[in-house]
Amino acid sequence: MQPLRGRHVLLGISAGIAAYKAAELARLLVREGAEVQAVMTRSAAEFIAPMTLQALTGRPVRDSLFDPQHEAAMGHIELARWADVVVIAPATADVIAQLAAGSAPDLLSTLCLATEAPVLVAPAMNQAMWRHPATQANIGVLAGRGVDILGPGDGEQACGDTGPGRMLEPTVILAAIEQRFVQGRLIGKRVVVTAGPTREAIDPVRFVANRSSGKMGFALASVLAAEGAEVVLVAGPVALSTPRGVKRIDVENALQMHRAVFDALAGCDLFVACAAVADFRPVDVAERKIKKTDEVVTLQLKRNPDILADVAARPDRPFCVGFAAETHDLEDYAESKRRAKGLDMIAANLVGASQGFETDDNALLVIWEGGKVALPTQNKSQLAVELVKLIADRFDAQTATQDS
Ligand code: PMT
Image (tube, rainbow, N blue to C red; front, top):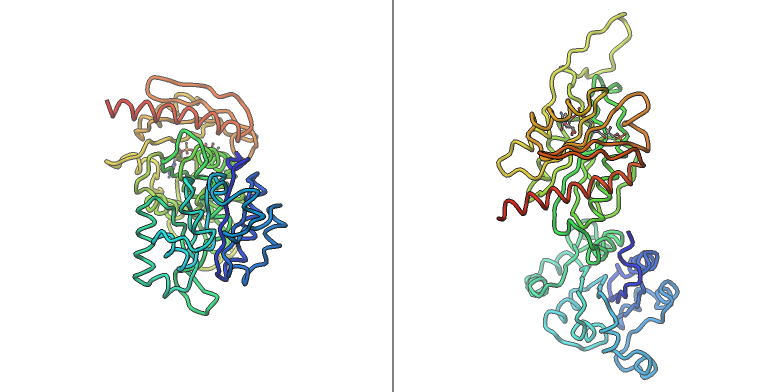
């Protein structure tokens, strides 16, 4: 997925200390195949050298409305038309005020008035300036006009204050820009995915767990995001990097996974439970490491809540997709799990010494009310593409029935 390939990104940079992060954003945009034209306000050059942006984008930086040389090549109106998207990062309180007022004292503000492309603004300023009613009113005006306000983040500021006003990290801004160009079947849908194992503590150093690597669940989260969904991935302990555009919440045990899933459920359209949640946890967790004094140790276990069944039982439940990991009688067990938990769909896989868990390849039998499809053995990434197609088909069919 490279939604930015060949796209024209007009990167506006105004005069804030976060201007140095614009260089990284420009680099990421170019890496994703975008053509980037940097436009700086005059005072932005106090914070970052135009030559840096020129070297990263391969284009001379534009900073003046009245530059005969540039106007002869691509005038400011042409530049406004050239842009597929305008991103201002960092956007100071002053630039935000200019945009809200519709004033056009320089090239960047003029381009924002002249363009019909979507405008994204990443504010960066001192926390008191951000909180000021004038700035908040201006942000409200821009948001009301459909401008995307990205952030700001909260935390330590260059001026020594702590609070809201930090520019978001370039990778987060990049994901928001990409989201504008993603063409997929799940745009505007919110999805929660669980993945990986859970670890149930016995003592501070030992736990009960299983062999799930998280590969299947992470592949699904990645494909769902590529289809335009807003994805929250609740992950048990795994050694995998977070798929692009996915919000990841790391948890350790089943109770934490249950809480994290329920915290993420508001407005959720789809729930995909791929995690191998431990069915039981030790009744008592020893505070100190258990010593090897006895030949036999008895571990008492109690049932963990069933996350998937609890989500599916909610009155405002999302479309629920479960997994079934079985060693035999795959279809029978999977179908009875689907019915028992009240699921819209179940993806069943055989698991054992060398299949299902940990491997790069997998095969699935996908079952829903009145239908089933066998997806043959293939790489988990490709398998995820096929499963997401089936999920989107069933989800669309169900939505159409509910609407009619
Ligand atoms: O992570 P990988 O190494 O890539 O391996 C992938 C996988 C084999 C783990 C995956 O494909 C898979 O089968 N995941 C589900 C494993 C499982 O726990 O299956 P189950 O049949 O025990 O559970 C049925 C369903 O209920 C599952 O959707 C599970 O997430 C859910 N569940 C189970 C118990 C529980 N307490 N809460 C749950 O939500």
